[in-house]
Image 1 (cartoon, helix red, strand yellow):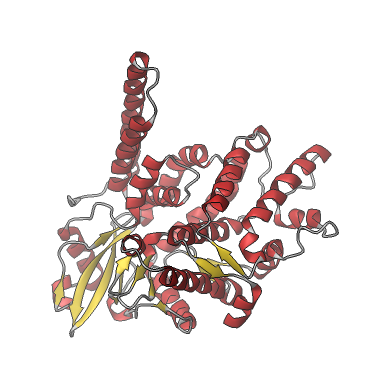
Image 2 (tube, one colour):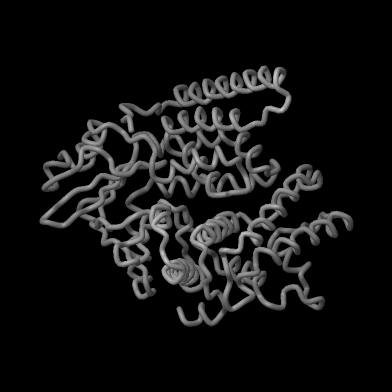
Length: 437
């Protein structure tokens, strides 16, 4: 993959890149509809592929928040056509890397030395490149290490990038303006945290030490002496990414084991630590040669407030759908309903959110759940698509939900999708959580 020798860092440079990309996409539409005049049966596949290519290439050059949005979009199978999902998924671990001189410059800025002065050996080419940083392999005293280096200018461009991608995200996520404004501050805060590698180091050491007892899970050791605000050094975990492992056709027993390890890891963080690794995309998981689940990248961690936790997980209780349960009061607490709602609005949103919590809460209401059941996921996507097209949703001036739910919901959607990819059957009931306490 061709290396990138510079990143546009100023607002003008980055805005110009967005504008140029918009012009390319516009050109693709003109070309598509010109062809359609000659062939009315022409579908959108070629258009989607060309747009996905142009948008991904542009975001790859910009890196940072812009590319992170593409990564988040690729995780939701219901938001984008397949061409976009496939292309944007590359941002999880296969974006164009930065050239080596920029890596050396970062080391000199923070350590006063080049990588070769610190380590016995250091790969000049990145072995992994994602949205915020890239990973190089190093060796010190016979131990292999992974060294993550942040791209220059990423942290300084978050706010301006989000302003530029806000209307695009609203259109793609099919979220009304009031809801987007409620959550944009939460997204910005998390992205700022993700660019602080000193904070990631602290959280990584804390969360991995507390989670070390979970069966079939492996974590790297972290090295504060070789880490700083823009560089993070940890043990190199041998293995392959989830997608590569699945291509090896592991047995159902092995898939269920990895799926259970994933579920237990998230259950322990959410229900015990109330802090969660909120970036469950495939690039953050490695299957080791002895079939353990290696977990990396604690840059995005959501701390779950106690009051929100208590309200949110009432939605998963077995009696939540009973006629005598005061679901309306709970929906008001969580912000699904507003005291300003008319009787008609209240009835409409009660029906919608009741259908959604019944569907999304199913894994919690059984002792074991088959995430390989594609009909379940097709139903989730069908409901999501139907709801997104409802004029009552699009035209609502009231923000629905709680900002703390943004990353908790994203975590569960990501986890569900991973378990569906693995085709795992997992023990999900309350006894599993109690065993982790």
